[in-house]
Length: 408
Image (cartoon, rainbow, N blue to C red; front, side):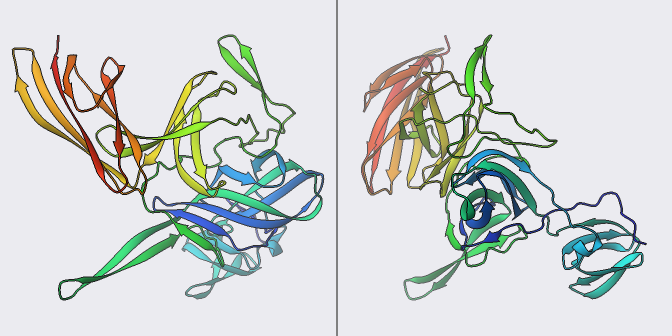
């Protein structure tokens, strides 16, 4: 009689059908945005299980089209009885070692496993991990106006997919033939068959998320009510929640706000910044992931502190690929025991096809006075000045200034 062993990890029986080819945006940092359509039997109110999600799946990135989402909770469906293991890819841990393969059948106190080195019989194993590679599932409770068999659009971020470029250059008579190859790596344990793929070249500030980290999501869901609680704000959820062990996601708030995109240079990369005024409700501190193209393109992420109504928010989402900056100290003179005179030149180069304006921020020290500058400047605070530098399409622009300063 086969014993059940402690330490067995179970996950995932397929509970829905994938009805369309997936779409993936892949980032070199080992992150991908996945879009896929799955078919579910939908009632006016109920729950669905989204299974066969990658091990690197980030729960707080999940969005679901067409449903009013009430909560999202990790779920762990398991096979029913020993026959439920048949045909599953598993990891088996035994005194003879760790084996990976497909379960053929259980027999006596062991099991037959089809591995890459042939069929093996494993006796007295201590644990089984299934499926292998490890997959995740999520239970979604919802309301819906449509019922019946429905196609549901899913979008989520996952780690475990990355790409890198490989080039080949062949030198000839005064020229070279250069060929480039994109090397894609998929460590998720899932096949994305017939996938449409976009590759992102450049640096973004990728979101940081632990397994099943909490973040509100979903379209058209009821919002939390905000009220004052001493020196803080209270967010009251609109309905009861079955808060099981683990993590549950609940929609918190939504707002439509105007924003502007600016470029900023502080002496290193030219940053892309999204700026808006919070005119909706007090915002709790947290990470903000920023998307474009109707949610199909992640452009970066940033964090905000607790932000009251009326405050300005700036999200630095990454480096501008087509803008580069250079800062050079032209001269340094010592005018006295404490007094110094420095001159600087900042150059911004653009490969964009349109005129852009770059905020050049300069940090100054001690007691300072700008004696000369090629552009007007604004004092941001006691140690920072800003120059607004127009940069032509496909060209470059520069600003120069001289500052006298002392430590007194």
